[in-house]
Length: 483
Image (cartoon, rainbow, N blue to C red):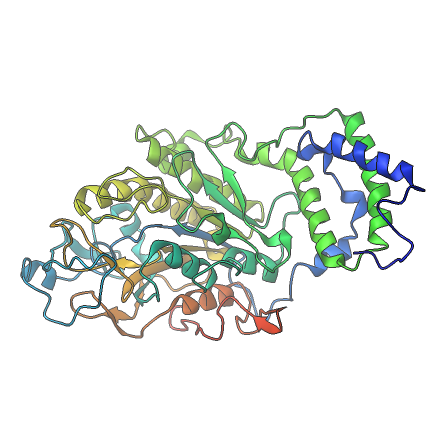
């Protein structure tokens, strides 16, 4: 650790320092309030961790990811297929790949009706009727594909471009590439509620891996009294000042001797942000000044508690990007219907109509309200809203009334952030089973997101273990017809 051969943390000649450290640990164990390190960090050094400059004109400044963990059904929502009703109950007339549970039934018609929406006439079902009303703002990609049909691998792949631990989340890459506009809040925030579990794969899908620690996702639970644990000061101002002075002494000595300068700076910056969040987070989560009309539009006071909590997440997402946060991810809660539960609430292998109906009811109104609210405030053009799951669901039945996983063709959509609304990119085959036209990948999705943020996905790299790594690995193309 140290580059000074005369330095030792156990040097008996330095008893004052050892005592100082014990006192430091005592003072800082009371909560984040003791971690105010603003006097110890050079702003220029901190900026170096923000990543490269933008490569071209920026259309979007922030991203909101509405993540439908568990895999919502595209053929029942944004990619309706009339032939499913015509051939309901008959075998699918094509070769079928092995499914996740290898329980292949006959073709199953959608329980939702399809029609054209908006002036653009985009075809969608009425499963998401409120979102469908925003059709002219949606850029739908109907030819998405994934490489994995299992939830954990699918979640890692959608978030990081890799199917396992050890790679940064898209939110971390965005924060690394764009930096932050608000030093009082993290650049990457994951919103959840008491009923919304972490998707399969765990918190690592929000992790920074080898990127600076300042880029990791910070989880805010918007239904707890404190969205962030220990956010309220637990020490008096005099005690905080004493801790700051002590930390200053320790840090100056340590910074002169360590070779891991960037890691130390990242740690200090995180601690500084934690201190600044003491005032920023309570103000952020206080929605008492929002109008009754706004609360009603989002559904904050809905009798459906899951919908009310998701509505609060959507409102909080708007408030976060309003304050300069770069990347915000929302989390769904489970109704425990049709096998969907915990971290994969959209996973209906049985009773699809009831399960998907409940899940759509949870997110439809709040997401539509978010789009309308951003638009009314003039924020939608610089805020990119992304809606996706880790894969889709098969056009044939499982267990009579459910659908198995389908990574071979599914839908995602984007709105705002310079995207062309009222458009559809790519297509699946006539049954909605496999992508057939303009086949799209997870890499293409993130290449397009980064492009709208002013970043060339091929140039946003980080040297690690002898290789220049990036979010899109060695793949990815921007959907130029949609931007």
